[in-house]
Length: 380
Image 1: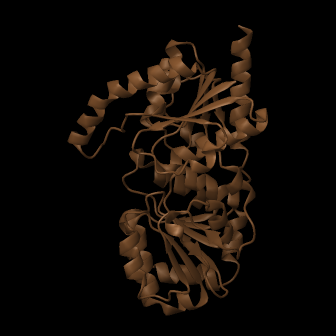
Image 2: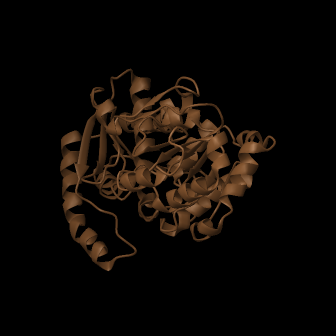
Image 3: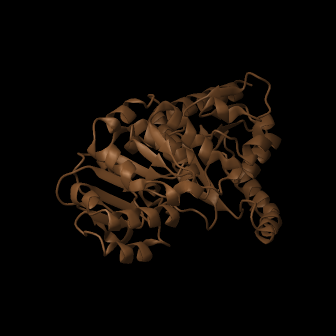
């Protein structure tokens, strides 16, 4: 089987795509051909650990249409024909048997050209509100996968082509790495996490680019409440843009209890080390929290299309596995009090951990369906 797996520019689309690629390789013992397609200049992940596997990596010039800036929206529209032509050239060269799209705008030309050439496609909606891309592509997909039943809202189909399949999560995240107190080596900047002492660990993730909004409130709280850093340890993942600012601000806090890191490329260790996470509400993050059963305070990004991060966060909050705080309420949220309640008193974290449902077979189910679709095509 020759598979084209379409990711995007951010970790929310890249990491599920990589999870599917890992499973294709595992299932075929390296015999299947795999190509990843992303957006040129917008990829935030480091693919170097995967290049030795013999996978192909390709990019096209395409951008998402901005809802905030008419000028950026116009530039994206003008670039669209270029992306379509580059996607056409890739499909003609690669001639894949099946396409898997993660819902990013990169999926649009790949799946539409695939429809024209008779190449079957699976599209996957990870969020509780479907993306514009998936709403456009739903009529052309051989299978529509949704991570939650809410994700099928507004997707046009023939009834039998929608299947609920969890968001694919990389093997390292699902299975974990080493022990909780292990050292986490960071490729970015040669940084290492070697937090001293005992106590619960709180990790702050703002997606692959970080979140200054979340970091400002966390750092301000730690500066005012010395007991938190006395009794607990903190990992702050900033993104490259916020790293210097956050590093300088963190100097006022106990350096042996707080580590500021620009990018965490071994997230499995970070989840394993964490008793609690403060994070955004992207679908990939929600899936990783679920399979690692990590309690969380989720601050959904208010700029997410269709407010889908809020809907994602509420799904976990309704289960009792997370606390959701809307971004415009974050500055007034009693963070210090809530951290004390969760970290110092009773078994609240254990209750949250036990509220997660078991949901870790997304990659396996996607690849099974890819194989079925490819098998049907081969028999025609």
